[in-house]
Length: 340
Ligand code: SF4
Image 1 (cartoon, protein in one colour):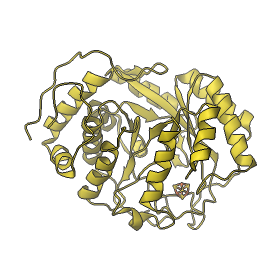
Image 2 (tube, helix red, strand yellow):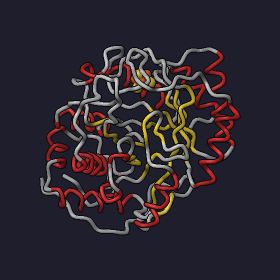
Image 3 (tube, helix red, strand yellow):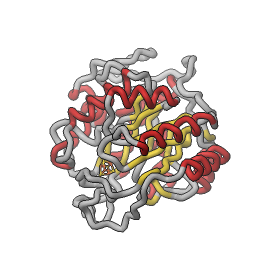
Image 4 (spheres, helix red, strand yellow):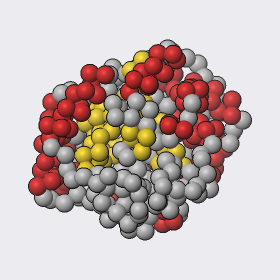
């Protein structure tokens, strides 16, 4: 099922991925760690900083999100930040070791207006610093994707969140197919794709696997696959969901690593509720990127600070990934095969 060479498969089935996800945990981690070492440096973690450039007041109804205008949360609301403020954040992040800077706006979709023009200017300016620039702005048309690419955008984040069949249980204001359409526009424009999901939304294991399978059977895998644990925000419909079991996160990370070996697997939301030891298991299972930053927030939810993260990485003997180093070029480790 998993071959001992550097082949990337795009023909995974739900059954195969479920088989992998359910392997005895230590066997699963062992195999994922071996795949990780075949494709990536195992001593590097990419530090990405995520800045909310427009916060709150969103018309969508994502049931996990504190930025949806319809829920009564403590999330502050602000319009588009000035470009100088964004640049100052990006420079600080870069000085501390971040190589990727993501700008998020709580929009349903991009509109062709002055705010979009300002975002394009932000992309140009941050790109000029030598950072990988990512945006997450909601749905895009093909033309808007092209304009972002021309401005120097490196990556666009558009998560699938969950499976196609569970999607309507968590969001009613857009469809799973809308998500796929924007991802297709991004891909065609020549921008790399960042797309993953969230666990802890009340979904089944089959939903988690179906979400991974949608990503792993894309013609080109997303270059970046964020795996999020639900951050339970008071006032949202999912505020009372149980905490995600860390071993479920480890299984998701490991399955993503095995299915999409060349991709960056991002340990994203939920780290605030994980100890350093629990995060280390995720790194062992193949996660090689985290979101971190000075303001100890991931958009509007708490996140470890950059200093805490640098301290954790030092304890684990890991170091921040250098700019634009990703996949390994040589096979350096053997790894065992699953006999499915
Ligand atoms: S996740 Fe994004 S689209 Fe959904 S409500 Fe929050 S800001 Fe809006």
